[in-house]
Amino acid sequence: MVCTGARVLTTLRFLAKGNYQSEVGDIHGISTSSASRIIHRVCSAINSRLTNIQFPRGEDLTAVKEGFYQIATFPNVIGAIDGTLVPIQGLSGDDEPNFLCRKGYHAINVQAVVGHKLRFTNVVVRWPGSTHDAFILQQSALYRHMDTNLNAGWLLGDSGYPLKVWLITPLANPSNLQEQRFNKAHCKTRNIVERAFGVLKQRFRCLHKTGGALSYRPERSTNIIEACFRLHNLAVKKNIQLNLDQPLPILHNDHINQQQNIAAQTLRNQLIQRF
Image (cartoon, rainbow, N blue to C red):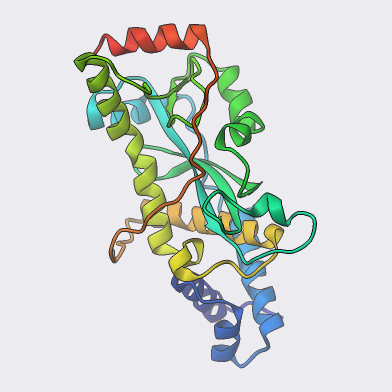
């Protein structure tokens, strides 16, 4: 079956609304199975041809650091990292418990890094909803890249991540005004990843519980999720306006990381002195 331009556009519109293959099929007079194939052919084409999720390197790092610094005078930041849960339909079989997240529904846990302009620069779409954010990071190519490029800059993450010399997390219990100011600046700067997730899921309600849940097996769901991230980046680049409704609650796998790293703690203590 040939995916015409009209069918591509209609498919993406329904994905954005949170509707699925039956609606796409109805409007074109085709079967549900054919509509499903069109959706996934479109998403696969997007993911192979739209190569716009790229981690900053070289000269781009300077611009990113300057952009983040303007938010709350937090220096040397090249990205904010977090995970977000994307609901999928209930599963059965041996893998089912792995996809049940802490919020009580089946999901994919997506790790993403965002730059200062709300564009995603790194995305990992493969892990079941029960997987901790710190584990996803440790298994990723991003971890290895950061661990071998220690002078590139810092990522900002929440307390679910381990404190590293390249990954700055907030203080669990700030004890003075300086530490409180550090945490406030950290939170304000890192919040950009929360904003990016919110905009992404406003654009594509199929990624949020208000749009139902992705009605495909996990490997097909990840194909759709990645396509939505790439289309979000394209929309940001083209300055396509978003008609915002009420802010969406963005859900994560809440977890406090207890790992200790002396060198990273020393670096964070030095950084706190700026505030």
